[in-house]
Every structure is written in C-alpha cells, then in structure tokens.
Image 1 (cartoon, rainbow, N blue to C red):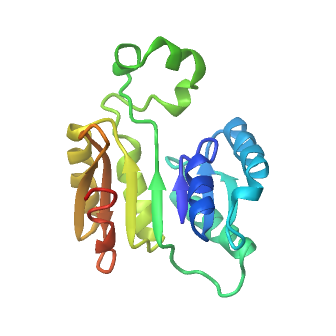
Image 2: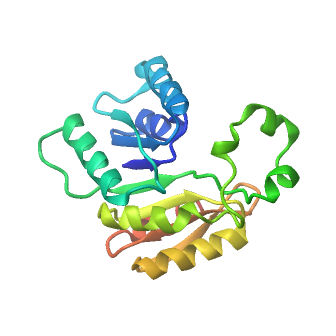
Length: 198
C-alpha cells in the first residue's frame, strides 16, 4: 500500500495494526514525517508482526518520475524479495480545502492546531487529485482511495480519475451519509467499490 500525503502516518499505522501490510507513507513535510516515525515507534506493539511501514519525503505535485522511483526504492528496502512492480492500493488524504474556503470552512480550533499546508489546496481544492490518480495508475495499483471535502468534489475527482483510465469509480459515504471518499479501480479492483458501505 502507498499512502500519499500521509501526514503523521495515522492511516498506514491503523491499517498495519489491523492487517499485515507493507506500506510506504509519503509526505512533503519533514515535521509531519518526524511525527509519523514517532507514531510508528510509539505504536510498534500494536502493529501486526509482518507489517512494515516506512515513511519518505516526497512531493505529490513535484517530479512524478522521481516520486515513483523513490516509492519503488523504499519498497525494495522494506522487503527485497520478491521485487514489487505494483502496489495493491493507494490511499490519500490530501489538502482539499479551497484557498477561499480555508477561513470560511475551517473552525478556529482547526486553524490554530492544524498546519495550513495540510489543509489548503488551490482555488477549488482539487489540485492534488489528478496527480494522485496518475501516480496510483503508474504504480499499478488495483484501486485508489482518497478523502474529499464533499460530494461535489468527489464527483469532480471521479471525472479526473476516469480520464486517466480507471475502469470504474464510486463515492463512499461517511457515517453521516455524506459523500466524503472518492474511489476508483482498474479491472480486478472492483472489491473497493462498496467499501465500508453496506
């Protein structure tokens, strides 16, 4: 698994506590990655025995070829046998709040404690999603899963991803029934379609 925009590593560490996974978490922030490594160490007893989670610095919006190389190299270091040409799934919780919506849509407590870098994207909040879809496609992932700000954004993300070549896409709803997660899959990845929904 690959977790793009991993932040403090909560998603891969939670999954590694639930199932045996090899994961590379990627983030642009050295501070966030330092916290991710601390979180991994703090939660090491909870991780499944065969789980391995590593974190690397990388820019999802930067040089795509370099990022793909770094991810593959990290997997080779985690477990060189057998060499991995593809990953099972790519997950992401990128910044998705629009530049104008940052002050309007986030609570004061969020603005005080969450780094703006982790929350605010571009003018419409979508800048990361086309690249996430392409990176997941190039990694050979069976599926890509990403948190979004709401249903309208989820529908735009589905459009971006279907343009890359994913054969299907869907929106998962949160516990309040709001569309908050966009998913896409290639042939063989249909298992992600319904996700946590009944």
